[in-house]
Length: 380
Image (cartoon, rainbow, N blue to C red; front, side, top):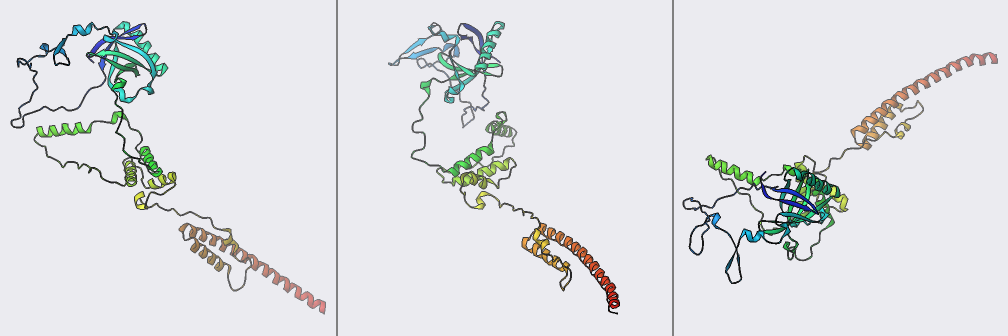
């Protein structure tokens, strides 16, 4: 990269020869001014007001306009003789935490490249000292005819310099904030938090200039004769009154949809944080799906089966009646299956019980028959 300024960093008694390199570049598309009637180029020409002669760059110098309108010539030699230490030096004046620098002061950015083999050691020393201290250096330097303020910090293995505006160049934000007292509800803040969390973070390297891409595509289409005008994007009407809550909810749902996430729980999540609802269920999202709870068969269903066998009502009929009552009470397929299983097991238990009871009855009858002859003999 081409350097735009050569000098040195003054770090106490340490001098570090450096080259100043632009850290940024402008990719915006520039247009030329043309004469609409014939498409001819419109140029700015530098013409002397006294004789009307057009001048070249070599013929143009600097001058200071005094109060009476007269111009005093100022040469580069005059500026070079000024008693300013920063004429060819970036002079470090202090080290401060980075958070103390107001982003409003940030200006152009540069890389500081070591200039020559002798600069490698002190350059590395300053870089590592900045890394370990976790601070930035505040410096002063002169560039393009004026003294400037700067901040030095480490980017990867390079020292970067950000030009800073002087503190008196930052305007106070008077009359900028909304007039009057405006209150914000907790529910609105909760939805704003949900939107911020949904949008999340972004890889800065993935961001690009969509407007520039569209202009380049339009220029290419016009050059190829295939350009077709499209409908302009409608701008929102000024002063339009909107439902802030509805706009926030829709924004959260749209952000979740773009990430492939479900958006039906937006209202419930925000409501649980704020403790209040945000409107109708239609605004909050789709209706939630209710999943039936699987219940275990109650022990009372089995206990209601008669223990004794006999009588007009059979045990299996009682089990079926109990299972049917259990199925009607729960009304779910899972409980019907459970009741059917209970009925099946009850039928099996009833059969076993009936079989055992019949065996006992048969044994008692046999015992009675044996006892009858004995009684006859005793009576004889």
